[in-house]
Length: 71
Image 1 (cartoon, rainbow, N blue to C red):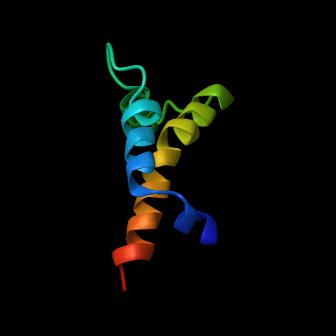
Image 2: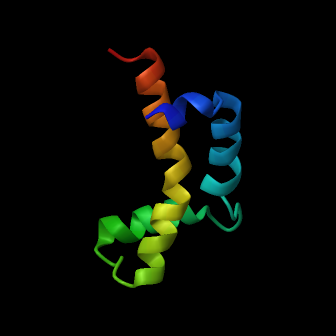
């Protein structure tokens, strides 16, 4: 996972705030897709792709945090 070491925390935070939460109105796509997943309505391939795309920055940030500060 050396590619995580090359990505800075500010860049990942910026990606989370922009790509992860876009579009901001009426509600972020990530929140919308998570609600669809909880309701069992996430079945179309485009919705699954949207969930993966918008969640990726948060997953990378979490992995980098665990790699840097975890056990």
